[in-house]
Image 1 (cartoon, rainbow, N blue to C red):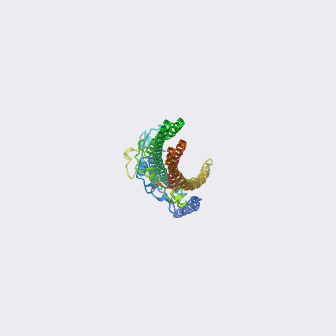
Image 2: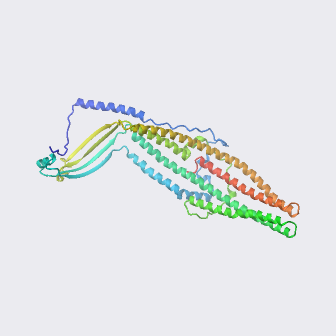
Length: 487
């Protein structure tokens, strides 16, 4: 017989049956909630294995230079302008900001996770059954037509109860991943600030070395003129002239090499700042740069909350733990409640005939995975292993961070000693040059002694500038390794 459109039905149930039914649901709910607390237990963040103080740390002050904003740590105005441009225009920074924007949208969507799915459906159809079929005969007898029409407008709702914390863990994972994107941005900015600062210090060192080469070239030229005059007077041989010329060419050869390196360094800095290669104006000289005597590293335990890469690995533990919770919840029963309501009619003319065309349905079901080729159990075990790996990554990142800080501290300390020794050597050699010139002019020293003194000054002054640049670089490394540069 032909089935008519669904009509609202009333099921009469005795009071005793309803009470027993509700008691059973309440008991099941208590069991579910109690077990849910056990299923969704969170992993404690492991304590980082850090020393009481950094090796080679000269101060036990709990404060750290990393707490300083980069504009306070780098007072040079030109350098500040370069860093400002890099933070805004560098493409790696722009990509990091876009990643944050995408993560923010996903995170905002999680606020709706506990709401049911709702879909509005509008359907209409016409079916022409066979005249010899049951539906065809029924349509002819009861509807007086050979066509069966069906028109429905409905709202369908579906909601899964978060019994085992699946949605809660999914939201926790998304929150941790969102926070990771911000830490990634901080890490990019930290490296970017350090890269611009080191490039700028290297540029000023090249300027200084170019000035040293030109100054030494002029000094060699003066000596060469004297030796040529002495050669013309027959006081020295042609060999003396040739060796003096060779020494001058050493300084001359440094000039184009240093000019090349300066242009390449300028181009690299411009690219870092998001600009086309061009010249960089400098307002300060290399000699104006100094390394503060007391650079406090603070206490190692503060690295966990300050270094973006360590903080990101710590957040990765939350992500991994949430994935374990989701994988565990997938192995347990899921309670789904569905409901639908709207209007339905076999005739378009009666489609919106209310209340006759109204219908409604509601259902609840519990589904328990039984046999899925051990996929769910494997997924859970893999999630546990991944969580253990994340713990190792976190501990390794802390260890690396402590090592980088200790390396920077010892570099600053030992390079300071080397810088002092080299400065004394340069000062001694600079005093030796006029003495050698005077002795040479009075015939009490050979031209080789003059040339050797000039060569030693050139090499010592170049070395002095390199050591100072290395010490400035170590200062930047300390600031970066402590987590400074993103404020």
